Figure (spheres, rainbow, N blue to C red):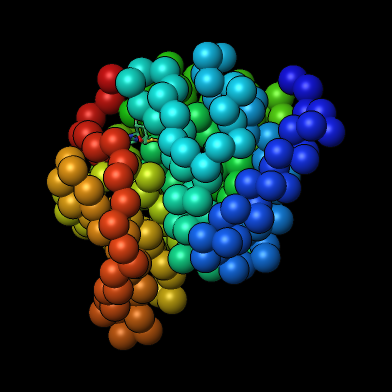
Length: 213
Ligand code: SAH
């Protein structure tokens, strides 16, 4: 599990690339500069780890593009000690970025294989994250409410149960839409309990599916 000077150098370049593409939150860029993405990749793609691209991982899923991870994280406005729920652990990369920002991370994955692999890796890297095997549509009612909720799979609708688990003043970020592309959507829960919705461009994610595998 080596993180060499070469890896660190490649990460600095990646950070400059996504800064150039519009990520301006220095805390987010710093987190990206710290997480060793090559350790989250499938062996056949390790050499491409610091390209700004999504890549296949186990169970037919993907590790998100670093720009997309940074974009969703920037929209969340995470502060240290905030409680964040992630739906779709996948490789665990996004969860590690949130943990680097000082968040208390709770993450749910419906694929047993990925749930087990990401947990082993993040524990080995000393990230303190709470892992759950289950259906993200249900959220984690006993651990909420959360300051932030991030969905990292394409959701056809905003799951009601997740809105219920958001704190007042909290922010939920979700790629909303069908299989071709989705609109990155930010939901803010207002003091009067109403929801403010804003849209932030098109992205492509693997689908959010119900139940467990
Ligand atoms: N955040 C991940 C990206 C993973 S891709 C990363 O940084 O690598 C989306 C993930 O969401 C997949 O692993 C998929 O299995 C998972 N997923 C899809 N529907 C889900 C659901 N209902 N509950 C939990 N996880 C789900």
